[in-house]
Length: 321
Length: 288
Image 1 (cartoon, each protein chain N blue to C red):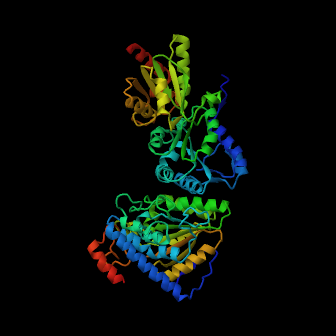
Image 2: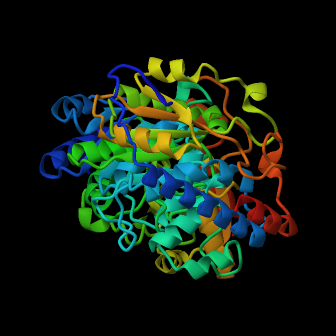
Image 3: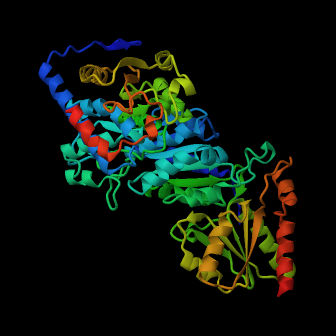
């Protein structure tokens, strides 16, 4: 793999900028939040780029009004503020409204999980996957790399539904070199096929899982499966179950709270409803915020979410067999 | 007399058509009575809040202020009307039914099983643009619509009906700031200023006066009038709809919560009070 390193939001915004030339129905709104790639967009399209100010509630409401008039809207802000400050606006004007009308608002939240590590718990985003999954008619996109985000541009314009795009804040290496492996109909890709244990991950944690799986194969001759989930809604449950049913153990790994309906909730509901007998181990954050200061790796280590902790979990499960 | 203030003073349209005033008064009386009849069969509805807005709804529709097509509620050429104070909107039901948005028979089913006419309207009902019921959303959504209409170079305008208690929602002020800055002169906010929230007079909860100055400082034009005077409402709506001076407009309609029902008028708890079905027949006779 060449693994070109890029920031997801920059790749996505660059594509939207290009689309705005040919598609006059696109608006780009932000709540006073930037990106190097946004500068040219706002300069070129002053009529269709609007900074609403630090006002996330109004960001969603203005986006709703534009979308009701047939525009495709991208609304861009820091993930925890976008999803939680304006949760009721998302619920009423996007989720509820989408049951009755077409409404194409794409909420771009930057700062998934602990992207903003040293900014502390106000900037950490550990609740958004479960909160957004709860809302009917909302599409939840959680890409692990920029190539997925790039491919999502067409989907975001063509599918006239509200969507939440959970983007990492940091530059990350490319995972998907082959676009044909990406299926927004299914919502996931099996990156590695394994024997007894399968990791199910989303976003940043997919990168950690790739390292773990690769090392297990090289150093211990262990064949561990890995599934990257990038659309939590909609999700092809049947295909997912078919893909994991031969495993004895599934380990969900997410940069979010566990036991609250995030990625682990998605997977456990599928296993439960099928009486699968597959054991599920949930890795993520417990019922507490992270006040400790340090970089992402350090904070992961403190919360048993680093590569070593994943390895230990795998080792324990192997021993159980 | 209605007063008009703010930068870019609008010219009053003099209406000496007594027949129009008479027509609108009769219509308002009819709407008030029909609203009470709905409340008689749907005691869950917020009657006091609905009665303060009767003349506003009446003039907007029967005064032909709004462009609309009842048979095609999504007609591109319509003026957009957002009923942000969803709790006090059942008085719009008889108007929409009368104009042909839906079957009049449906008015007999308000809040009953299987109908689409609930206690608080949403966009499931032909004629309603948005989801209502949670307060403070209307102005922001209306700003987005007004902005879209401007980009489309459309002449249609956006009306929003807001309750004065709704002014406590922070999101309302985010929208007020936005509208002034973006010069949304195709946005007309009608404040049903009935002075009462759920539990008390607004003045006693958080006094918002002086309201006119607040809006003017956010680059709005402000008109204050008697919200039960159909003539004043008509004149102002005509002027405000025409005026394109780069400033959004606020129409403060001073109203009485529970207007027409003596037991409700001036009762600070009228928002949560019902009028018993047995009393409604008597009130209907008195109103006639």
